[in-house]
Amino acid sequence: MERLSEHQMECMIATMLKVGVSLAAALVVAGSLLLLHQGHGGLPDYTHFHSEPASLRSPVAITLGAMHFKARSVIQFGLLVLIATPVARVAFCAGGFLRQRNGLYVAISSVVLMVLLYSLTKGAH
Amino acid sequence: MNVVAFGGLLFLTSVVAGLLGALTGLGGGVVIVPVLTLVFKVDIRYAIGASLVSVIATSSGAAVAYVREGLSNIRIGMFLEVATTLGALLGAYLTSRLPGSWIAIVFGLVLLYSALVSIRGHDVHAVATTPGPLAAKLQLTGCYPEGGEMKKYAAERVPLGFGIMFGAGTLSGLLGIGSGAVKVLAMDNAMKLPFKVSTTTSNFMIGVTAAASAGVYLARGYVDPLIATPVMLGVLCGALIGTKMLVKSKPVTLRKLFGYVIILVGAEMIYNGIRGRL
Image (cartoon, rainbow over all chains, first blue to last red; front, side, top):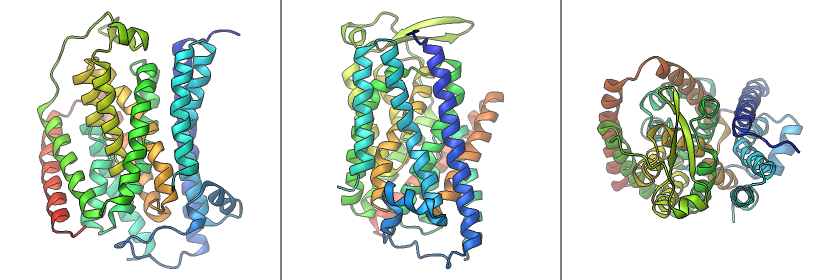
């Protein structure tokens, strides 16, 4: 397999980040319009912290809600895409280092990736 | 206030925060959290949740420009991200354990530090061109374009830089900010990397660091869609405008002026924290 140059890798990362942020922004805007259309039931009290409902806290629940076009879930799904963008960036770099046959940095990227996935899946514990 | 007015006002405030954050290099988070808590009276946990999300957006958005110019160092960034992401997990854990008033006090102290760094500017230091044994083993070297030619550089004092980065990650996870000032401290002052490489690599790392605590914030319900939406979109717009303006001019006066404002805001956060009002 052809070796990936540093510059090619950088350009691909840049494109990936751009796509991720744009997609997230579009989803968040779409969710907001949906919210205004569906009705939102007034402004909650934000002066005291009372957490979010379970449906807006786990990646699986958020995705399920977004598939049913629930406005708040669509927004939250957009934010999830945003959070996933740097995670995808790290995964991509790991792949790039693999193609460069740079074992040390494949290992280092994998450690970062595992910390990120741990946070997303087991974050509450 | 109804939802549309609240969102609109938050959006406009966030545009200004993002613009100032980009022009001064302090980042949008240091402005938006105090504004949300002190002006909008939002609980500090919702404020840092929304701020952290906006930090990921601006970091990834701005990285597009820097990465293409070949200024940030992917290997150094990735190596130090081991420290920042672990620190971010610790920070996010601490956020759920510490009372809001403590978080406000730490936030105020970080604001004071960031403002002082911003006012003072940075010292120009010599850059090593040949790596020491540890930097060579970890491949913490690179070259960057300066004055039409490619200049080589290598990282020094790697363990110290790694340690400071862990601290930067902890602050990022605790306060929902990018903590770019501390990241630059680690790379510019400790590891003696060229300043341009430090700032752009720091920006590049901010998104990954923030993503590590964002998972915890999301699971704990700190990320509210109605607050995070206008803040994320506003800060992103402001930051993109600010980055474009930066290409044309270097606003030294604005940076200093804004630094003094941030000192006042930091003092206000500490005062309110001690009085237990946040």
